[in-house]
Amino acid sequence: MLEISGLDVSIGSVGILRGVEMQVAEGQFVGLIGRNGAGKTTLMRAIMGILPARAGTMRFAGRSLAGVPTHGRARAGMGYMPEDRRLVPTLTVEENVLLPAWAGARADAATRLESVYRMIPEVETFRARKGLQLSGGQQKLVALARALVSGTRLLLLDEPFEGVAPVLARRLAEVIAGLRQAGVSIVLTESDLSHSRDLLDTVYRIDRGQVRAG
Image 1 (cartoon, one colour):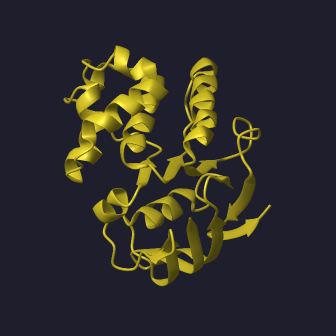
Image 2: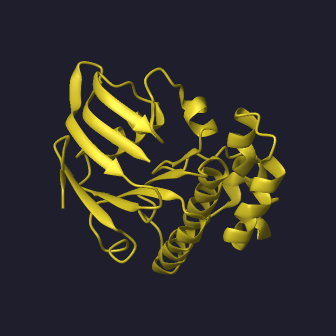
């Protein structure tokens, strides 16, 4: 599903990722584990096309991602849940969830929304609230729901459990585990394996921008 080879990424003049090698099979749940500042978020943004690659290749479902913009990757079936959620505070929950569908002009927006509500029914219960009216944990659920709208093939979940109360962390883990039935591939970042140990098929470790298996 996703193949990364020799990937280098810089932010300005500072090299962040060096020679990243990583593979994600169809339906596989992969963890990217490392401390804060190790390069986890940079890698997620590079996969999503938010940050450009300085060197190396990335292939998604057998096709090169070179030159494919972020919205093109979303249209191809990638979904991204950023660590800081990035909800639009003045929009309703439902409007926030539908943003990727609107941006990608998806004809199946209503169908995707219904599917997401079945997976995360809590989100439907507060669909009319504004983003600024939600707790941190509720915002995480909405951010996951938004990622699911476009992430029909690959989900990039950046620190989904960070800063979330234990009850909501368990609920997020339940939702993520349930995605196996949909056959979606997942790359999930965490600083350690405290929440995701039982979810993952494969673990990569990242330290100072370098990635190794195990």
